[in-house]
Image 1 (tube, rainbow, N blue to C red):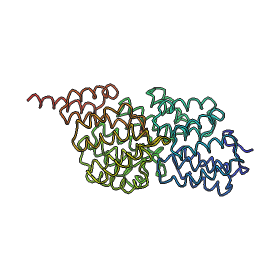
Image 2 (cartoon, rainbow, N blue to C red):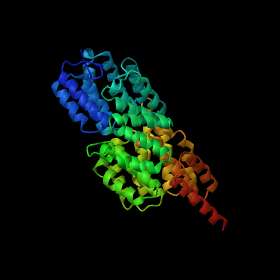
Image 3 (cartoon, protein in one colour):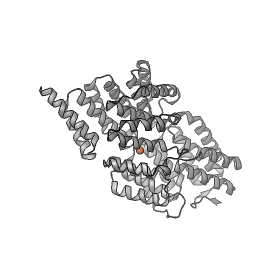
Image 4 (tube, rainbow, N blue to C red):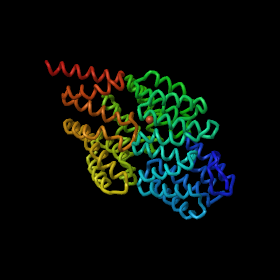
Length: 448
Ligand SMILES: [Fe+2]
């Protein structure tokens, strides 16, 4: 039986198919090229290549986009039809893919863990489980699952640096910043083009309030992470925009939004989410963003017929755009859709929607409508549990910023100081000082 380049058995007799699988895997690890087109070439050589079908299903599923679900289901069905020829690992991965396609993300991750006990060098399983841990907001396993697998890796194995990068990001989400940065820098010594490791360091700098270093870090490595065919580059651009926004450099932020995020790239939901969140932050800062939110809301409206009810984190961002633009009909429709998605037992999204997405959608909507007391109640109640619907600590900072802003706008200044205090401890940056200054001047106005 053939093995992949890390010694994991695969049920194909075609060395060419395995080689193409490895090419597709390297593309996926770097978010570059077109891994689906590459794996299709492998499947053209061996139509019964189980890992080829599973690779396709997993990569498409981790886009977080429901439009790919029919193709995911087809690929899973094809893998399932080959079960009797498949290795035990491939049979388990087929089960994981079936569970993902059914929306049962937690149970799918349990299967990945079973696979990694026997095959810790299964690079695809590590990465898919890592991404699903991210979508599930499971910071502990973003760190620990990779740590469990890393025991068997050697530094000369293909993709080792990418696994280090995943370990670094998991450490960062668990607030272990020094070790996260050390591992990510080590990964980049091996492979400077690993955008996920570049990103892990950007997160460390964001969380530690090292804003100037963050700008320098990303600008200095642009040639490595910002290649035109890199699907992850828009998110690293988003991080760069976030650093600039902290420094109050709005023109630089808008330039990045216009040229790197809110273009054709925003057809991908992961990028559209970033565009939405950045515009929301700009509005909190009182920046004139022209008609950009209208454009973003148009894109969301065009997508929701297909995408609604798949992932609460995405639905919330659609709501941000509708709320910002005051699109009453779209708001009511999305709220009804989220209430519908909140019902159910097998889909993890039902829990994410009922416990996090829907209350936050109502809270952010209340904020946009100037109903600040209601916004505060709803956001504050959910905010500390909001990791349960995924995203990173940096992304969810949006909730704290909105909460503080709602308190300032409603002249609830002690509450604004209350929440700002925790942010200052975490990020003593210009953004926090701007908020402190606004609270102080509001106090003076109240006193007058
Ligand atoms: Fe990020």
